[in-house]
Image: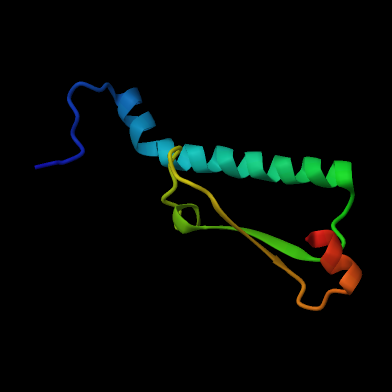
Length: 88
């Protein structure tokens, strides 16, 4: 028995339903990249090197429009006191 067979849906609807998570992830990635670029354009370059990571279902490539986002921002380990104050 095929568990993915849904007779009420036409081929286009099936394609959208089964590809929606990948399409959503692609659009969310673009949104986050665009948002980060806008922030840098308005505030200038960050004062230190960093990496922005999304963990959880997004990191596993299981995210859906109903998933929460679990962001991690990793920064350089050696920061001056001035940079530490700016980041806080």
